[in-house]
Amino acid sequence: METKNIIKSWPEAAKRLIAVAAGREPADLVIRGGKWVNVHTREVLDGHDVAVAEGRFAAIAPDLSASIGPQTEVIEAKGRYMVPGLCDAHMHIESGMLTPAEFAAAVIPHGTTTMFTDPHEIANVLGLEGVRMMHDEALMQPVNIFTQMPSCAPSAPGLETTGYEITPEDVAEAMTWPGIIGLGEMMNFPGVVHGDPKMLAEIAATQNAHKTVGGHYASPDLGAAFRAYAAGGPADDHEGTCEADAIARVRQGMRSMMRLGSAWYDVETQITAVTEKGLDPRNFILCTDDCHSGTLVHDGHMNRVYRHAVACGCEPLVALQMCTLNTATHFGLERELGSITPGRRADMILTSDLRTLPIEQVIARGVTVAKDGKLLAECPHYDWPEAARNTVHLGKTLMAEDFEIAAPEGANTVAARVIGVVENQAPTKALSAELNVADGLAEPDPARDIAQIALVERHRGTGGVTNGFVSGFGYQGRMAMGSTVAHDSHHMIVVGTDREMMAACANRLGEMGGGVSVWKDGAEIASVPLPIAGLMSDDPAVEVADRAAQMVAAMAECGCTLNNAYMQHSLLALVVIPEIRISDLGLVDVTKFELTELFE
Image (cartoon, rainbow, N blue to C red; front, side, top):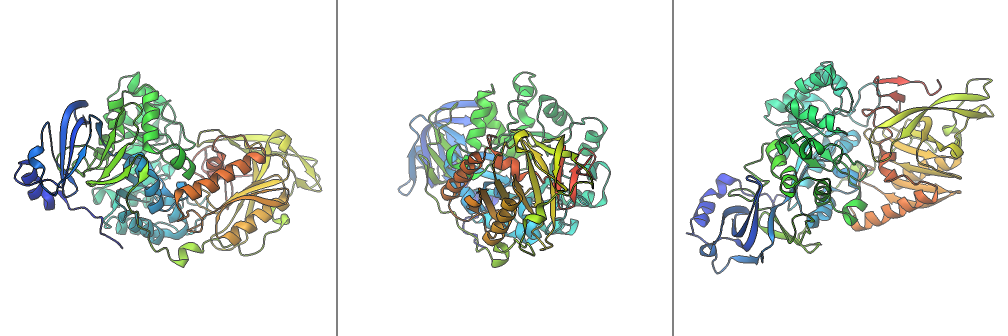
């Protein structure tokens, strides 16, 4: 594992920091004449210099010319705002279709210098070894990428089968790794509520290591079940979708993480707890959760979330706290990062406007890593082994017959349960529809926006296919769209209107080693190869984003008008978010956490 970018600890750097702050020794870097945005006091202090040594802030004062020596690098701020580097409190790198190195390369020019990542996607495919690979590449980067040890693989035991399972012993081992900051989102909230020994053991291993337990409470029930979940130890939650959710969490001593990802728009409906109700903003945090490569390349990352929060009425300095200091404090890193103050890692943005936050220069650990949107730093790659690139095992060539849905004998129509996609939100709706039967088979009905969905087992080569119906994509004609990104079990999800197209799509994904494939009228019209675990590409973000854009255009060509439809597609197997999902074991009623029949 490459470690050249590991920064000296504060105690190791203290002697030099003190000497620079006292004016006895020259700094490595001085930024002169800027507006110091102090997130501790919520002030903007004009006419300040910042001195950096050993990759950390040594001093901030109106005049630090005494800290400038012959070898000191000097950056003229020219009255611009000096803002702490932005922190993403909860995210999944795999959702960007990129490896940690390429994800870092994509977001550094947007001012993100710290990420708290939960690699539970790869954990479902490759287990603890996959987590270690993500962790090791994360530590190689020129910015701070902290890893949360995934807690739930499978996310809902008994309702899905994953490639690997995470155990309490795995969690305890990971807590000794240098880049592990805590436990990833505890998605099995019914397990916590009912005192499941395995879930409690994972939480205990994290708390015994004095690290943070991430939350995921995807239920509208804010009564006894929510109180029980909070008592179990999760310290934050990002699944809130309304003001009442945010308030309930902070009242119970949790941090409310409000997300704006590629498909999740949950800031506007929750930030009113601060902007209108006037609650203390210290316990509110901004995050992305899931951003695909197109969003990162074209729209931004945490700078996009910040601007959105400001547009929703949040004061700029408060919004900045929510994506810098509040985040650092939550993970016990307030003395390490999140502000421009002595001893902290020298992570900074220079910007000419505090509301729109143009990212003009990015400094990480005292080094300029991006300027005017251009990456200037190297983001080293991990040597991903063949085992990580060979993860799609179908067991056989799939045929149209594998996607047939037999109706009850003698039936002319069937009353079927249908997964209803909700635009811009993670939850689905449990719908029902009367569908026609032809030659003994239940048929989709594109005219009523009802397509077929299939989950194809891809970890153990069983050849298993679970079939059902889905509504909301608007697909028309003969088409199929498939992906090996299928949160969280990451089997293969194929949605289509034609069984032959669905079989062709699935087989193509098997040949490709994973990714996304869109078919229309007998031919593939777009693809995004994701060879690493069937989840990620180690190609540059711009290239992946271009392929993803072609994929989105191809979905639209098939009739889809849904915003960020790919993200919605990839969540159809997420059996911990209501109301109804699909797994390798069947349809799952997430309101009851039990399997249910396709036909009513």
